[in-house]
Length: 588
Ligand code: EVA
Image (tube, rainbow, N blue to C red; front, side, top):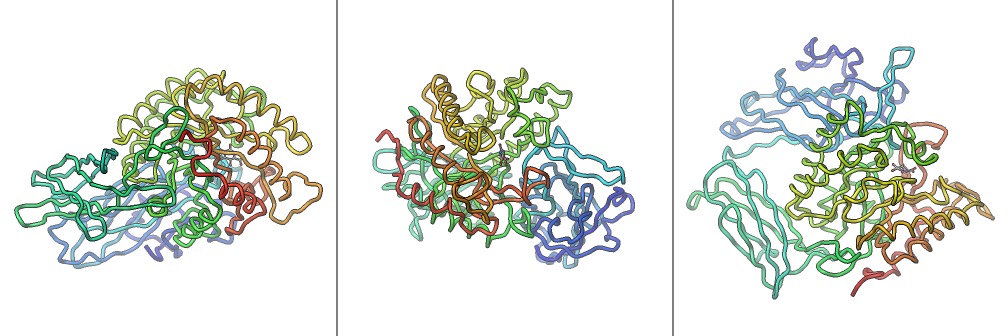
């Protein structure tokens, strides 16, 4: 990380012109960050196409004999990586890590050149989906089918790693509560045949030990991981050859179970009512670049307000956020970047007209390609996040067009895949768009719990019409009651755009007073249905979107401003969430 070199490549000539050996006329660019909001001219901020990053790195001589890799936390949206002019890896998808093995390409005891060609164009068969328009002046412009700014760049840390040739590749854990403690089934993957030893420590005290690549660790009187009361053990894996340690890896694990049962979410067998937010990785200037200061502030705000859960709308976040959730005892619904699977730049609105805009997004020529990309992202997300105690569920899509014929054929393999690869078999869901009703949604039957994005009183019958909105809302809820079959429902979105500058008596839409009235109406509805087991308001904070007549320098549905200061609604939520018991509407 640090200050790298950067250049746009609008004619895509960099590969042929060997920019991998050094960029012509570069500017400096911090990593990690989005490049967009750093620039002061519009063409650069809105740039769409190929662009390059470059840096030099030193490889110590004593690393020779080891496996040397470069790991990217993410590169948005696609990347080709060159080391000393040689292409070493390419990757599609802007929100998950990948690495390049460069053992035989780097020069030891010398500086080496790393160049990365990125591209931020959108299309209909990659995630997230959208289009790339070309203006009359020849410039490309991103036309997202989603409501967040198409930030791009090296958004997460880039790490240079030296690893033993024989090493630990992966591990997974599954927890079980038993009489007098807990059992942890583990699997370790290595690339060799030497013995594996696994130990669990509580602070400095060893509490369990096992040998072999798979096994069960028995922990007497295990301290369980809980909401706002996270307890973490140290999980230590070693590959050994007699007394010699060939490789060693540490991680933190929280022992807990999570399941959906009889209309409730059970954490360690006890009901938990979810409360919190849909979020974004989004902040001033850095865009979607990882910023630990913002991450920490967000957790402080979420603790203050009494939240216990958030959805990583609309893409997997940086790993540092999950580690923090493990430590702070937050619950995460982890979402793959399957957003915009609906053909419209304001898809969430267009789709809500009439009975939903029907374009058959899952019946296109490109659908098989989209499905392959979707499976790859889902696999990578689950493999990355499967061991986090904080991760309780997988969100497999956000607001897809789920009323058309191809829905079932598209959904089934994805829901099956999530179950197959997740060792903990976490519950699966997707965020269901307005106007996809219990009788018209062809995807809801795949969900282990139902997640609704609803805007009654905002996009639907807002302002003076809010009393009618409540009637329509309740009518819809009565319909869902008939198809739940013991599944809980949560709200993954509800919210009202609110300008922090506006106060009005009596209220009008966009004022702080209206946001509170809107929330009261929604909460009244939630409170009158026992099957509603969670409320994740949209959004934690105001965030940047594409410019347009629907947005005032971004989406203003935040409960906090983009600078992470409270709107009036934050105090409203604090009063509600700190008074609702953890097992509100529980079965205990
Ligand atoms: C909104 N509605 O209109 C939100 C969007 C979000 O930002 C949605 O899932 O239905 C989308 O991305 O504010």
